[in-house]
Image (cartoon, one colour):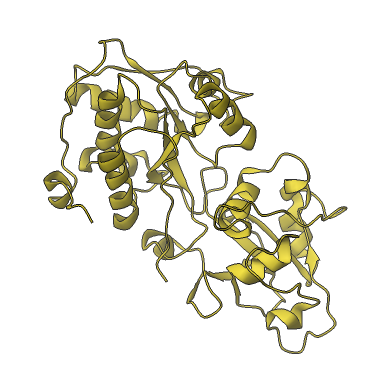
Length: 341
């Protein structure tokens, strides 16, 4: 393993990188929920690095290329970076690859979502009715419930007893929210599919769930059905609905989504605010300078001051820094939270 750079070992101090491209500003997009944080980052950065101006494309829009001209500019190669507050949509990924010779963007987490504030990158929760006694589910079990591919090797559970609920033999599992993956996947459905249903480079396939409602009404439907299961954002929970603890493996510790488990990198379905970077260009060194700033003490301090999002955990911060420092700005680099068991 390569040694960590001295500035990382000393607590993520800011290190300048010589400019390698013309003095025109780095151009990038940000979604509307970053309308305060993204400008704060930009303003603080240009004070510290006046030779590297940054322009945020406005107006800020939803985090999908079809709805935000700024993000569309990044996807089509007309901008240098994009902040994203969800998993990049499949259509957007295809647009980027088409414009960049089949290469994917680098994805670097730069902040932790507001874990229980709906719509602000809150953690994804697997939810059941409060009357359901189940306390934990593993990735293998979730894959068997929600997928038709079952790449993790689990058998199809026939009832809640098959998932370990004593005394619930013969009680069927009612999967809700199939509208969230029947067509274009929602942001939370993408999180589930990419982290749980897919494995080893193989793409998992959703189990069809017709007439099971949309993701928007999952919570209300689960609250009314003791046999139901679905997923939503933590900020959307209400009375008679509770999250289930999630485990990476059948014998691994299971963790509920809480501020503490997310800060400690324990909960596996936490989400992050990400910086997406185009493949290496003449401005790669300046983009690395900007990325390192976001991951520095100064950049992370701006997150705390926002009052909405949270700084990265030490483990995620280290992975992001190592990705930027060792690999530079090039495609096919994705840094994802690796929860500790």
